[in-house]
Image (cartoon, rainbow, N blue to C red; front, side, top):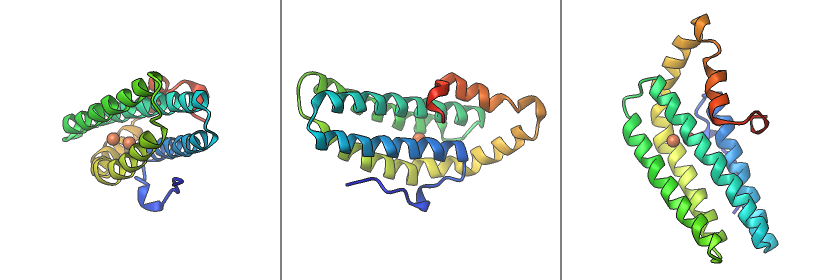
Length: 157
Ligand SMILES: [Fe+2]
Ligand SMILES: [Fe+2]
C-alpha cells in the first residue's frame, strides 16, 4: 500500500514535516524495491530509509531537548524501541531472510501512528520554544547548526 500524505500528518513545524514526508517517500521507494524482487535493491533502500529515519529521530530529540519538552524522555524511549526493532529487521535481511514486506508494513503503521499520536503531542511546546528562539537574532543560526549536525547537506534538499 503506497503511502499517501494526508494533511492530518502535518505538524505545522515545517522542518519536521519535510523530514516526515521524506521518510514517507522512502517507504514508497521500499515498496517499489520489494516489487522489483531485487534483494540487493531492497537492502540498499532499507539502509537509506533506516539511516535517514534515525537521523530524523535524533534531530527530533535534540529539538525537544532544546525546547525543554516535558515528555522528551518517554518520547526518546519510544524512538529507541523503534530503532531496536528496525535494526533487528535489518539484521534479518542481512542474514538472508525475506523481510521486505514485513518491514514495509511495520514502518508504514509505525510512522502514521507515531506522527499522529506522539509527535503531535510535542508540537505546542516545541513551537512556542522555537518561536521564542527565532525571535532572538543570536539564535538565528541555531536551526542550521542542528540540521548540519544530523543531516548531510545533500540529504536536506
Ligand atoms: Fe518522534
Ligand atoms: Fe517524527
